[in-house]
Amino acid sequence: MTSSGSRPTETPRECADAAASPGEPGHEGPPDAAPVIRAIAMPADTNPAGDIFGGWLMAQMDLAAGNVAARRARGRCATVSVEAITFLSPVFVGDEVSLYARLLSEGRTSMRIHIEAWRRHREEEAANKVTEAVFTFVAIGKDRRPTPLPPPLRG
Image (cartoon, rainbow, N blue to C red; front, side):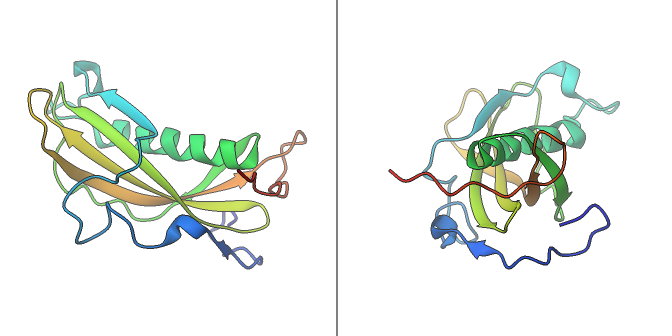
């Protein structure tokens, strides 16, 4: 994608792990895979009302997606877009926030990465999904221009 919001001219290749999996609608708990990031929501992360700031949560999601993108591209990547974010429930100070990522598809230079954020009260085991979104990243070369993704690593 470009920053103007137009769709890439390349045809995305669907990734093998893009099939339905735990963490999608209808599934009761977080994905089975290990989270990309776990963070504890701290008092410094609150908005003026004392709740965890949505921007903090979105930044954590961007970091998680960026980690997946950089590993796949084996280099620098840039966030190009984020599809709609809906906050389903609040995050409170002291909550553990786990961010799960799944590479949905890739094009010549771009990757679409689905991120789910789940919260767990520090004294409980139950977790609930607080938001999800799809982030689009573009691989960036040394010249700071889009560069083709390298072939996927095997094994």
